[in-house]
Image (cartoon, rainbow, N blue to C red):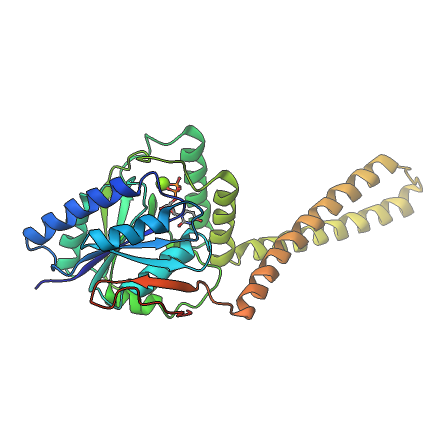
Length: 328
Ligand code: UDP
Ligand code: MG
């Protein structure tokens, strides 16, 4: 059975790499169509995430020249996860299966064949998993490992060494649409969908051109998003710690009173008191901060603002330049 594949690629300031990516993906899709693995209606769908460079101009140009290229233009920069979701939700209207990947060719394009083999075996979601992190810096390797370990410890089910290179069937995407959260962390949400899943290993290359669009600050935000959106355990840890400290303090207080009555020796102990006040003061501020983070999330969720706004969609099916303002 022939199936239509859409490859969704979020792009933020990717003018340096887009030409090469388009060339590689075009070759790959052509080959897969020739091999009758996918339908000839299969496409590449670039999502322009409010780029400030020529990314959208290039996508528009490729759309005219290259039969495979389609594009979605967001009204402004919304971040990788939202851009990806915008692409997935647009692509699922036209495709049977969607593969998401980064624009920088770090994800091995040739793994797509294996993704589709798994789909043919009945999987609705196939995760691309890095076989090694040799190419990563020492810092990135270890922070990533710590992040996965912490996420799993906190009870969120994230697939180890999986970024956003994955295949999803139309059915899985329709289910994904029902997850309405604004604090989007797709790697945590997608395992919640269920269905039959599988993993495909691939070697992650270095960025083909341009610089990473994920500086440390964005990475920290992303990790926090993951932890806070998927686990209330930090709050529970705070509650139990608070309870433990109160109990110990109470016992200590009784001890002090009794020793005072029995021994009649009141110690000045000023330094200890100040040290303890500072310690607990800091601890309390930290706890309030963590609770505040959750309240902030609730605040964002209750506003129910759209996660992305699509400015333009460039398709092929004779309805090109269909400018719409669909809001999701
Ligand atoms: N990206 C995006 N919006 C952003 C930041 C990044 O759409 O605000 C895209 C970017 O164009 C790329 C993907 O997300 O296709 C992953 O970014 P990058 O390769 O820079 O991250 P890294 O691989 O360094 O973690
Ligand atoms: Mg990258």
